Each structure stands twice: as structure tokens, then as C-alpha cells.
Length: 296
Image 1: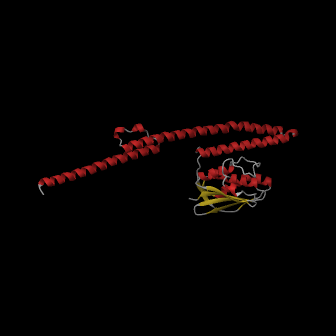
Image 2: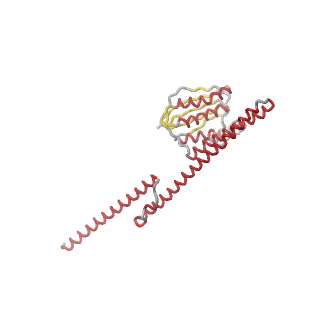
Image 3: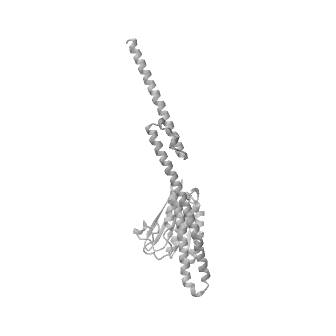
């Protein structure tokens, strides 16, 4: 091979090496730019104006447009959450005083015997309205993310007892015994909101049973569960999938107290913690509602 042949080979090798070096350097800059864009977007500081279009490849340009749109969208969502938070607060505040006044005047007028029947009905409706507003405010805050659940590891027994102490007077008034079986089940849960969920399940049991209520807690490798069993009339199979819907009332219990939102709130609380709720029921025997919470 002549010297010219070797020269051509050497030049080709140098050109190939230079091309590889240039390609790697360009790829490195591209990845650095993409990484910087993603870091800014994750920090909420991304603006499309921060990048010179002449310096961007087609991929970088598309990503820049996408991240800019996503940032604006996230800001809009946050702004809507703030508006919703303010609206819920206003509704809660503005309705609290009128309802309190209604209940106060009802109590004053009930001291006159001739008004007692009508005023008892008025008092019941005012309390029902108060319960409805409280439940709607809670569910709206959970659904919108205004209130975040904060699950932490802990024992369920203490939270169960706190919920039981709330329902005890109502159960005693109806002559319904509630049995709590000892257990040391542990889970990862938000104590305040889990207490709310367990109370709602107990309230539902006390409301519909004339027999007794039993509370147990169990563990499996993934979940711990709180089971609330009653000896009530039971739920027909075709209705069991509907009882956790908002405002759903069973066909046999349309005249019972309540607004049909308690079990829906239980489901929202369970899902917000990575858990779930289910029901097993047999007509004429009773129902068992189970709240499952993650263990890890």
C-alpha cells in the first residue's frame, strides 16, 4: 500500500473519531439540557423563556413546550384548589351561625308544651342539615386535596377506642351493646381521619341494627383490617355495590335518619391512605363492614 493509501486511512480514522467525539459531546449537552429542564419543572421554576430556541434541538424544543404547558396547568390546578378551599371555608362559616341560631330558638320555644311536637321535628331537620353540611365539607376537602392525609405507623386499638367512645352514648340510648375484641393489629394510617371512618362505620351499624355490634381487628401480610359486624337486617346483594356511593340510601331504609354520605366518606378516607373498604352481608342475618389499611 502506498503512502497515499495510509494517509487516506489515517484521515478516515481521524474523521470517524472526530465524528464520534462530536456526537457524544452533542448528546451529552442534549441530556444535560433535558435534565436541567426536568429539574426546573420538578421544582416549579420552569419557564420556556429561559431557553434560547437557537440552542434547542427538536426534541428539546418539544419538551420545553410540554413542560411550559404542564407548569401553567399545575399552577392553574393549584389556583383552583385555593379557590375551592376558600369557597368551602365560606360555606362552612356562613352556614354555622344560622343553624346554631335555629337550634337555639328551637330549644327556647320547646319550653312551651304546645309547640313541642313541631319543634322536635324542626330540631331534627336542623341537625340533619348541620350533619349534611359537615359531611359535605369533609368530603369536598378530601376530594379536592385541600386536606391531605398523613399516614404514620401505629396501633389501631387506640383509634378504635376513640371512635367507640363517640358512638357509645347513641348505642346506649338504643340499648345496643358494642363488644370490642382485644387485638394488637398495627397499620400505617392517619389517626384522626381513620377515627372518623371507624366512627361512621359504627354509626351505620348502630343506626340499622336492633341487636348487637362487634368490633375486631385482624392482620395479613399486606393489610390490617377493622371489622364491624352487626346483627341488623342485612343488605340485599344487588345493593351491596351501591352503599358506598354518595347519597345512596337503601330501598328498605329511606326513612331512617342520615343523608347517605357516611359510607362514601369512609371509602374516600380508606382510598386516601392506600386502603379500601368492603362489605359482606346476608339479609336477615346482618352485615360486616371491613376497613383495610396498609401495613407497609
